Length: 358
Ligand SMILES: CC(=O)N[C@H]1[C@@H](OP(=O)(O)OP(=O)(O)OC[C@H]2O[C@@H](n3ccc(=O)[nH]c3=O)[C@H](O)[C@@H]2O)O[C@H](CO)[C@@H](O)[C@@H]1O
Image (cartoon, rainbow, N blue to C red):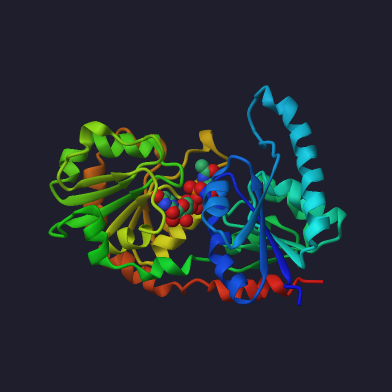
């Protein structure tokens, strides 16, 4: 008997891939044949194309939706058109029951092709304010799921549901001892994990390293610094361990950590919330983005779930002092986190997606 087919899409940064990763095992269990459309070179190719042999990965051309001037702005419309044609041919061949799009620029041609082939498509928005790709996709999609209630104000009535965040279940299975083994840390001091978002963050890296000696008087550090950002001069610093990017071990590194410093990407902050890690957020500035992380961080601060420093203030701030404040506020932050409901399971999310099948 022919297996039902689900088509997933999304990419550009890990934030547009990790929800899909959480859903893949559920679709597998349900007997679905899983296909994924991503780009040739984005992080989705590495995470899904190389990391999930149970998924058939199709790469298409995709332009980038830039808000700034670039010569590529003139060639990208051709790449996007080519992407639509490629997505059309894939959808006509595999005939999925439904398409789930997590956003990012590669998803736009897929959603357009879905509309042309009359395939139901639902999209998912992780941030308070919808990203450009999802804004473009919205008129062509059947429904949008949001992580924040507030996002419902930005999208048409009746076409949106707040599903909340979806967390990869394996993140709940971390073991502190395993985290200590991987990092070689003793666990004698409290441990801070630093996550600069899926690509790392030069601003966060610089601020941490500038105040390292002071910070390490109180804490040991696990620093996820992003590709190409390892500082070799610090390689043998006792109590400070750097990784460019971690995959399976993340769950154990988080379990070993008492506090977190993070960019305010939606997935990262909801993971830290679900794991009840008191966090200091440094949102990406409005100069470098549409300001989505500032809204995410402000929301968390207002609910008493996080401390926040603006990127513009980081250079002047002594992070060691900010971490002491976080440490003093630990109990209160955890109490507030315990008041928030746990996120929906990937199984529940899959049921919600499937309700939009033909
Ligand atoms: C620069 C940029 O465009 N950032 C956006 C991007 O963030 P970004 O791609 O950084 O996404 P998130 O912070 O939402 O998620 C990062 C993901 O990477 C994982 N991780 C991180 C480090 C590591 O070593 N290993 C690992 O697995 C985290 O657990 C998390 O699941 O998408 C988010 C969700 O739409 C947005 O809120 C961000 O504004």
